[in-house]
Length: 115
Length: 317
Image 1 (cartoon, rainbow over the protein chains, first blue to last red):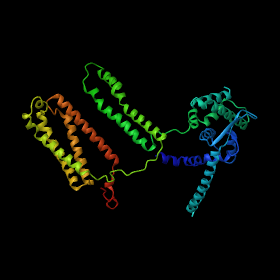
Image 2: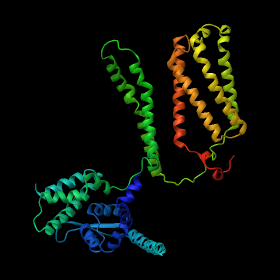
Image 3: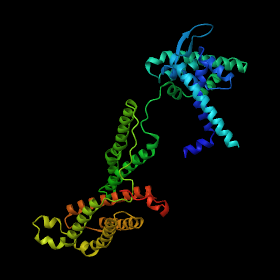
Image 4: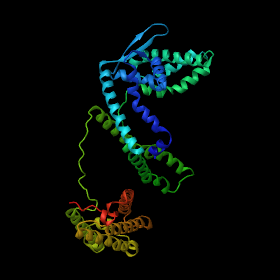
């Protein structure tokens, strides 16, 4: 069974991380960032995301109206900067509340399991 | 090769898979980001970037097909995961059945000249052989239309229980009519040879049984057929199927099919060739349908009837 293979092949951890990817990205885009700097910022906080995953994700979130972007030419090549749009800020607030609730619930479940 | 040129080539490969309106914008951003990634990688390695380093970076980044797919918004599902197994089974079984029905004719006629079978095989392949793929193609087209429709007008359908909740339930009026017709047909077959004299020509000639068939093979049908008839009648009286009646029905059904298959291969049934060929074709189809229904039955086995007494659900309907 595919699901059984997934469980033994280390994919659950990947799936778990995938679930929080959007929230992690939104959390760092309250200030404008371009793709590379965002990846560095996330990696510095122990949330390394593969570039091949992160850069397309930014475009998809922008396509959904959650991010706003603009090209800037400063020191170096032209860079596309992303930040939260008003819709993105709303989603970020909702996801943050939901995440905190989930963490509290999971803590309770895991603590019960340890007893 | 210049590492920047490698990145250029890669970015071109990605963006040509994207919608036209996105290409230049995504291409510019991708080149810029990959350039920075490469510079950082070179700085980390303490040497200048080269082709090998660029290739390693891009291979980690993902194949152009994969990356382009990540840039696209999620589309609609053509075949739901839960349906993919049944879809594959029905597609392959449909092709296999069509081949099984048409391929034997290629080999059934003796060769008039060397290599004729091979020529016939080629003709079969370009007609029935490839033609059998209409079924998977048709199923895919239907799935595309259904998938697009679900995507375009998403709605969660409220679940409703299936009409037949009890697999052992039987439709008494329908079974009664079926058994009456079955009994009449058996009676007609039994007396048909004696009625032939009263039939007008050419009907009498067309429906004249082969004498050897009537004497040696034909009579074997009645015990097994009659047995299956009695099992169905018992189920009708009881008002529902039981494990025992289902098993007996399957055993007698297998007997009927074995006798019918024997009729097809053992010799003529009717003296007129056209009537004989047509009858054998129909009988062969009946055997095939029975085998398919047996396969479906085995696939679904065990049913609710196999549950221990205490766990069996109360009858419904």
